[in-house]
Amino acid sequence: MSVEAWVAARANGVPDALGARVGAALRVQRSALSVRRSGDAHIAEALLDAAVVTLGDALSAPQMTRAHALDVLAADALATYAFEAAAESGDLPECADRALRRIAELGSGA
Image (cartoon, rainbow, N blue to C red; front, side, top):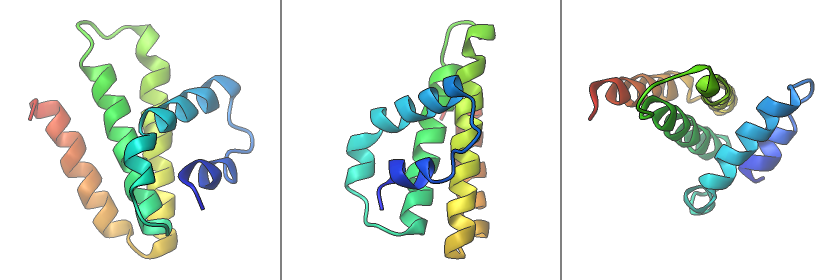
């Protein structure tokens, strides 16, 4: 199952703008996502990748404004989906640890 299909199966009730921004983030990451093997653990990692890139892009703006709110919400949704996929594959503690480290690196400028 593709990452996009996995998300689409769980996106009932998501506001249109948020769904579109999540979809755009996944399309930007498509080349990275397509080289991964299948399975929920790999879906989780691909979603985490997209979340970190999306949040990093928002944080790298010279000045964060309300215009970045949708980007931050999309990063949150992608991370939440990553945790859901990780839970389904039994990898939640490891995924949470990777997420914390990667998000902390964004704040440190690493």
